[in-house]
Each structure stands twice: as structure tokens, then as C-alpha cells.
Image (cartoon, rainbow, N blue to C red):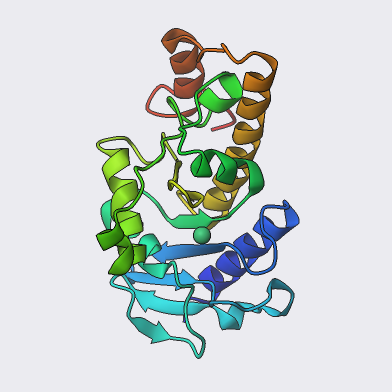
Length: 229
Ligand SMILES: [Zn+2]
């Protein structure tokens, strides 16, 4: 079932390793088949070097297992909440990549200091508020998803393809699982650049709205002119 999507999810998970975003079994990526209403996600705790496309677990949008011998990634309820809320997304990737996680641990949004950032995010990479003890005690992963959705508000998910979960790490998404993995790589780079920007100049401020929008809307939205269409 969903052989092509299994391959894509397997490859996106390995891409996170290839790009140095994942140590051991940290991190996970998934895709959704909108047509079938099914999620394909990495299994929990299987070493990447042993993982095969056939090990991917298929669930419905409520996270109930439809096919697979292994347990799905424990973050599945977070992924599922994102798929239910954002019809435009096709994949989710979660890592504990160093620089992005440092911002999440510092509970700080990543300011839009330059055009590299604006190409992907129309503003800061948001950070959630810390989860309450109640949210942690019960349905933690679902509540993590809800916290992401709250901070996203009415934002276009493809114009803001990641959120930092306070005290945890980034969750990223895109129109496909490959795009979600790409967003995870970009967020890590933006996090490192922003940290170095503030190291060089602690008083650095975000770029102007005009420069941000010029870059962002070259690549996103109806007036996009970037690339070969
Ligand atoms: Zn995590």
C-alpha cells in the first residue's frame, strides 16, 4: 500500500541524516496521501541504517494504524494534528538539529535578519509558549500540535513552514515530505545565521518589511516570479 509514498518518506528521513540534522534515532518525517486520507510515518526507534521503506507505518488521520508491523514514531499525534489543520501540506519533518533547537530551548523566535530567511518565512520563525503541566501529563504529543497551531494563527503554512516548540525543537512542513525535510535543513541554517548575526551585533534588527516582502513574494503566492515555471 502507498509504495511510492513509503519510498519518499524513507528517503526524506535519510535526508535528515545526510544533512547532519539527526543523531541516532532523533527526528522523524511523514507524508500524507490526501486521496486516501492516510499518513505514512517513520517507525519509532529503528536505527536509520537498518530502516527500509517497508518499515514505514501507515495510519489514518486520527493516528490509528492501518498497515505496519512496527510502532509509529511517538510524535505521530503532532504530525496528524498538522495534517488535519493544514490541507495544503503534504509532509512533516521534525528534528533536534542543534541551532534550531538552541533557539527553541531559549524560547526565542528566530528574527528575520536577512533575505535568506525572507525567501522562506514571511517574518520570524515563531516559537510556541511552553506547555502547561496539564498539557504535558495528558495527550502531550497532540497538545504539542495544538501549541504549534495556536502560534501559527491564521498564517499560511507554506509561507511559514516551521515552528519552534518551546523547550523542544522545530517541527517543519511543506507541500511534500521532501519539501518538509528541505524546510528542516533551511531552519537549521537560518538559526545558525541568526545566532551568528546576534553574536557579531547584539543590537541587530530584522530587515525592513519592504525587503522581506520583496523576497518572500518573489517565491510565494500568486505574483511569484522565481524559478522556471
Ligand atoms: Zn522531538
